[in-house]
Length: 146
Image 1 (cartoon, rainbow, N blue to C red):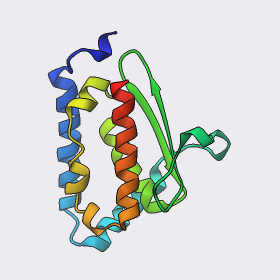
Image 2 (image 1 turned 90 degrees about the vertical axis):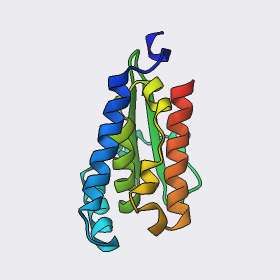
Image 3 (image 1 turned 45 degrees about the vertical axis):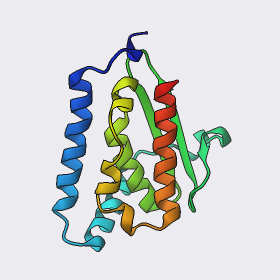
Image 4 (image 1 turned 120 degrees about the horizontal axis):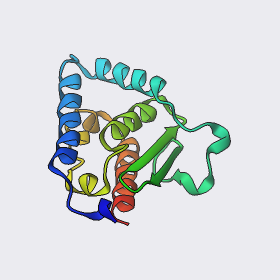
């Protein structure tokens, strides 16, 4: 399969460009309350997963809120949908999706998810919320490696 080949420079650069844009987006916010408001706005805008399509096998445990993650593999990319019952987590999921949805698996594996910690959200989150983000990224990376 071609998606398991070395990632193209442009595919990795696309993720890098999104990561840079996310860092700039959050750098322009003055303090934690502004970042939190922005995260909640992103959460409100997330399409999510309709309740009738949430399956037990798609649920991610280890976070204080409920999380669902659906990953579909196409020949060229991973298509990812995610949702949560908590608005802040929905915002964090929106960030993860901006980075990885529609990207080739090899590009996902070649990119470090450290940007999510650098956005100054990680150190201000409850440990269980930060853990939820890490669990989501871990599942995405596992799907990319499969």
